[in-house]
Length: 104
Image (tube, rainbow, N blue to C red; front, side, top):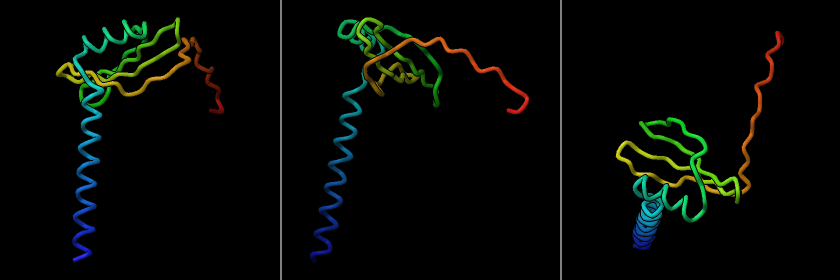
């Protein structure tokens, strides 16, 4: 009887945690136009880089060279954009590739 109680409790907690994680993920996503507008108006961020990701997704980095804030987004084929990461101290780099040597 006690064993069943603990199993049911663990399942209930797991279900609540999964539901909470799913809800949080949904809160970090919106239509692409809305996300871009909010990044621009709230943080002064504009698109700095773009690339293609897995499963037909578009990965973009938005940043403000004035404030140094940055945000990485992923947009799916349906036009839903999700915030993946954000931070501070954004810098534009212009690094050159090292010259290959015969030993390499």
